[in-house]
Image (cartoon, rainbow, N blue to C red; front, side, top):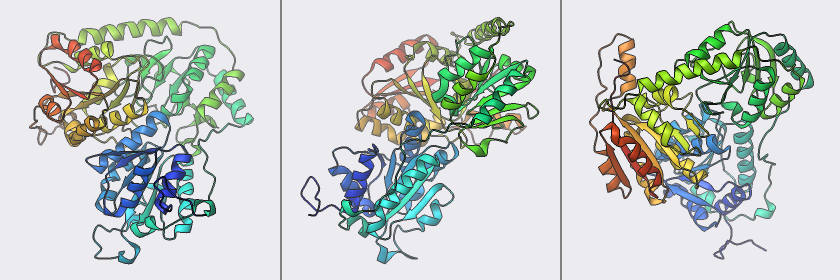
Length: 539
């Protein structure tokens, strides 16, 4: 008997694929419909478990899908058309590729008989996506559709990257009986345990060190408790990468803050004076800046990361599994004063940041903005951080409590903030979702503020409006170039938010800022807080 949809029609390839994804718990789609994807889009419409978030630009779809995985570890789908729809995904999918976020991209393709030079909205999508994807294919035969889908999912999850599947429009419409489809097994998640030999080698290296320091990276986000237990056992301070900011609250007695150009002076001192770095899920990027001569115990779920830095021991495994195993084998230590020294250094640093946050200066200074945000955003807030000067000040001055945040790490693409906040609110509907962005980053994607309004997603968009590409201005200054090409002509962002159906609050005076942020958090609608600020870092 032929299986039918809820509306009584025979199931098509599109119906079966959407149903298969729902069975795997993948129900969230971002994209824009069009002629080459109409059967897939209609299959989403008719599936009661699926939800399609229609955006205004496909870049937003891909950035939101990437952010969704960074926040949750779950897969979201980009669903758009052939040709320009597919190419518009590129920036967001490259963000996922560079930050190892699992994303599935389903793209329509022109009907098979029309493929080739001269086709309207047709490109060689296999060739286009090849540099981006860990899996990349086109469904040419309906009987292979489910097998290729499950294979794509497996590559996306295990390979931690982008899997792309193109589906010609005529293939999507073909009838398909799911009971007779060939499938492959798709693991919902991957957890890797290290070998006993690797754990012993790591423990021996740690026991042999006199001044170890823990470096927590984004790969340790789901191992925060294990990291703090290791720190307490061996009495070692914790420094973090930028992407791991907030893995533990900044007030935690063992957390020294970020290491690198946005980091704290005491984090730099601790690493400089250490004789071993215990790197948990960190990739030793140039931005983190761990000196090359430092010996390291490196724990990572990606074996290709091991060896990028001089190793005392390499541990191939998931930090959530490996770190507790190492902690059980290391020698507990007595505190020789590291905790008291760190407490004093942090007290002095936080006092310095407080003095830097001038509550009277106008235009409002970014240090004061970050101080107000630190004091007013709820502890359960989920923060999407854009790239630019706002990112610099957030990394340096924002004090994390128990908030979570995500950003565009290795690609460093402006425009990540708003799509990330949309994804955050979809992932955590009961939490306060916040976008911290600049006028440059927000203006790249501001059309999709309407998307938050359309789908009733209350998000708070905080815009540091300095009328410049201030990060570029600073880079020009440091490279001895005069400022050029960095001035921005901006609309009234608060009025724009109102025109979109959301709320807008414009803040010019520093004494109005805290109340504006609190009002925005309490509003049950998308809101833009447009803050007039200063592009100059330091006088």
